[in-house]
Length: 428
Image 1 (cartoon, rainbow, N blue to C red):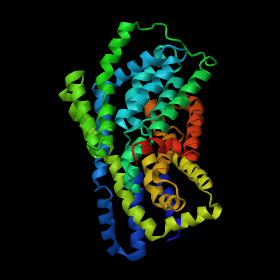
Image 2: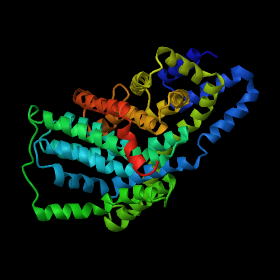
Image 3: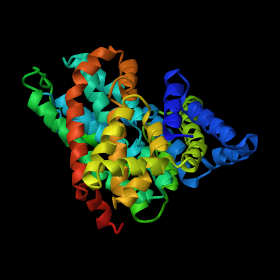
Image 4: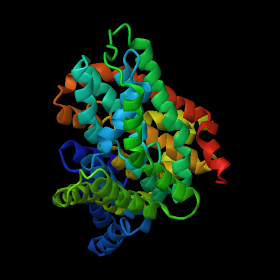
């Protein structure tokens, strides 16, 4: 079956409203039937099962659970108030607080949606009460939430590591500097536009005693990345075990330290976590037979030959890949883009000599930009709903942060050292 027929059929199924996972599964099963009849559907079942039968993928539901426990257990608003102590005392300070809070939260949950849904309510309300326009506050919240899956731990890195057979620990380390650059770019934009937008200055500044009390109260929450990332670096835990540790730690802190997480809250937290995890893992399962079909129909070979026909320079190929991923991210959910495209793009980058860890960070940052790019920007919709802000207001304000993120994307694309320096320090 020609490449064009497979990919155009997938686009059509998505456009008519089918869920991504259902579209992938239907197209894979249909292509197998067309190629060899119903007997080949046995392979479909085997591949569907193997798509989610990986130990490393167990990290996904546990990182999701950790984020949900943090939101319910009192860790979220403590992180926000701690960030306010350090960067909240300048013009537009709550914008900086928003970004720093997301950077701190991202070191625990690994999910952009968990960030936008959890911190989003706290951040937008605090900024609106302080005199910020709701659309502006929501735009910063949506943009800063994209840092979550780049700073370790990261659910997309776990998925990419499984697809590309790359060390998840190396990917976690590789995301540190790019995540910091993302936060820095947003804070620079806030600082440059604060006066022209008339952003307010905090009228009340906490005294030293109150600041110390606020920071001390957040220490148990802020210690989570030390346990998660530190355990990985010292070889004590695997990424999956680190996810379990993060969830257990969040539950312990919420129940016994902050005492805001009640046993009666756990059924709802577990239900929401299960639903979110199933959505991700269903896509992974459906993508496995679809990837098999792509390989059998030699789609990756056609993509490699097509792109190499345009240029054999790695930097040109990376630009083309960035453009493709940015466009796809505007219309398709990020994890779906990853599982669809990686079987086609990984052979190409391998042939070009591009490091798979470097490429993984480039891919994830591309897909995070897609989360705040209309028309299908998941974080835009999430913040709009939880903060009750009109979606068009957010879109009007978020474009400048998109520019900042694209600048960071270009930096890590053409300067691999920004990605590989930290992993190299730790022997990867």
